[in-house]
Image (cartoon, rainbow, N blue to C red):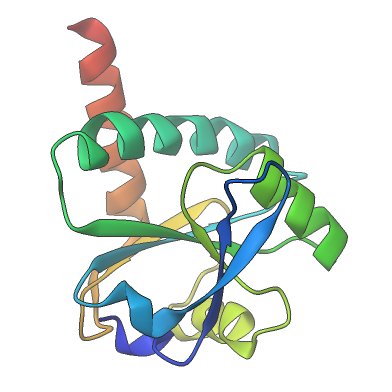
Length: 147
């Protein structure tokens, strides 16, 4: 499990449209985690979110990779974050808005621009930086569209 998220409160989209369910970060188990830093007001984030949703659903889920995407909001308030998560983001998790991990992760990982995507392993260590992650997602999605 990602050590960075073990004591974090996560939210998952509920089966009831527009609702969320709490989840302990410990429930991530031994999954590799893609931390996705974004905000609703950014056009670049909205475009990349669509690519990430495609990559997540058509590549990671379809092939059964033990990976979970966790959205780390940079939205200015909980209302905007919830709207962003429920209505724009993919079928993944998010860090509860008032959880200190939301702010601390960005600082620890040196996130300086949005969107950013970082891979952390089950020990919580960063294994792929944001620039490389974003380029990989873009390439895979472009390649799939050409097939």
